[in-house]
Image (cartoon, rainbow, N blue to C red; front, side, top):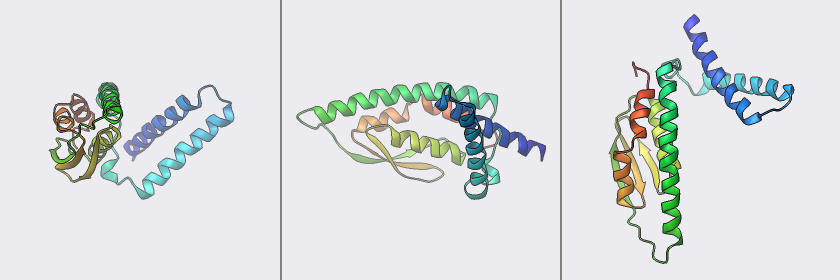
Length: 165
């Protein structure tokens, strides 16, 4: 029971920390609202979305892998934004859209959903469907899919997974 509280408190700390970052130097009343909102989100998640097997403690190893994952993904996001802007602004749209099947290496549902969302949020690619082993990806150009297979952020996402995932 004690371990369960530690997990929920770590999630609360992350949610409330994000609120504080976004609220900047706001009055104490907004901090209280942020704490209540963070607690309500956790109550809602506990009852509707997160199953007990999905709730894992935030480990130092996973937290340390998050920042390199974010930096590498943001770099790829910036590169993709520039490339898609060039495609859209060019006179001839040099695209070869197609669907690809990507065998993803992740085991936990949360890591798989994070990967699918990272792909969808990157311009030029879209996750159409996924199951435990594969992702169906739509790409504007074939090299977008090839770049995904060798993306460095995949290793960091795998490192963020809990060891028992």
